[in-house]
Image (cartoon, rainbow, N blue to C red; front, side, top):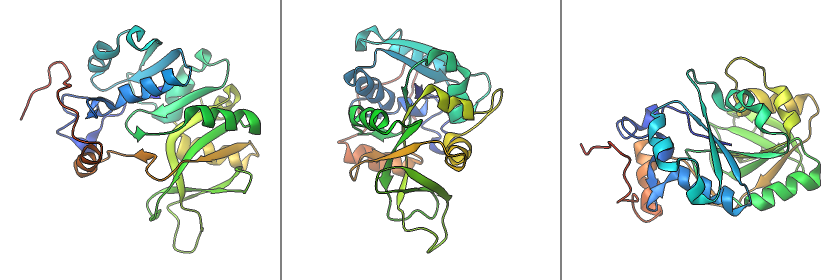
Length: 244
């Protein structure tokens, strides 16, 4: 499942006409990079959740046939958060499955992430990456064997030696969704994963190499991302997008 329902408020006015996951990088929307990565990893059925400007996404991807996959859409009248969005369509996931955040530029070995999940007998496996400054992030402390021991939210100096943070790419076994409350918003990083670790569930971390994920949480970060990737990605444009 790829999460693509967010409002992208911090990127306005860029997201007034285009959903954040449809902003172009390397000549194609961010979301298209995810669809291609999943297809390359052998995934043939993809769910994308929608809320803000859903027609832009549906018009571009259709049923997914162009990428060799079948795409199903989950329309959210009210935003449900990362975990609530997946819980809403839990019936579509009888086996372990990927969850990707559609608004990050991600370079993750999804096959290796899935392999770790299977070998470890994990309930949830999270891609992690290192940050020099984690004072505004949630940090995962990981044992030598990869098991996640605890999460520390916005750690104070000296509170943890870990610099590993959530990259927004997971493999989840279906039972992971038992930890997500039904019927309302819930977030994996804030609500679900800490509760799972506290409850003894097997969560494992997959540490990505430096530069494996880049966010686009502000116009400045998006400019940096597109510059590093070789430009904004023109000439791709969403239908109805206007200059100015």
